[in-house]
View 1 (cartoon, rainbow, N blue to C red):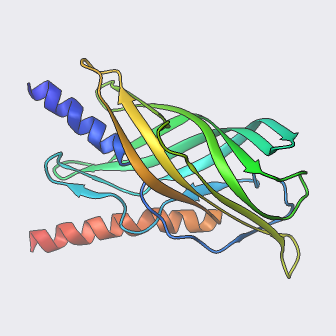
View 2 (cartoon, rainbow, N blue to C red):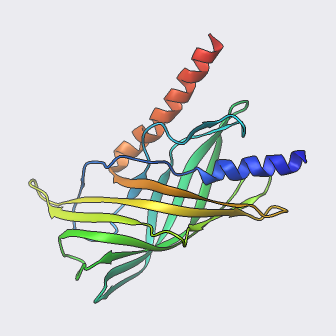
Length: 222
């Protein structure tokens, strides 16, 4: 029974890895090519918060976009298949923080974009996601898109006044998570928002919730 509760706690912690973010200012890049080089999507704000019944707090995370698997133009628009790494931190209320990483691939369709150099604003749908990670203890977590909802957002590209291109992008994502535990567990969460941020800002976004958690612990201790 205790083992089952521990597995459920692990699933709850994994299910809230992404948290809602407010749109960020556009980031300036040297070209209008997608994905922009070094693209990082991050959640901001207080994160998912603490879950007393599970004994864990979850910080906001970042999705770092890796190499391009394929880039296809069609009458529908531009379809990009990409590698990615999602990183976050699980913070048990009684224990040290635990880094957690999911790696995998995702596919997006920039609807109506006709070339790699086109500027404008387009609805962007996430077509697929397939990420996996291993929790402490060996349980594998799989993250995909919730098929009962549409995940997507907007991508905007415009020439910047000082040169280069302003690129702004965000996604509202509905996710489906499952574990290979016995019995297997699954849950869905959403909409969860990730926003493209400048790389220097990523560290600040990750640091803010950790500062909040430390302050909260100090208040409880006093």
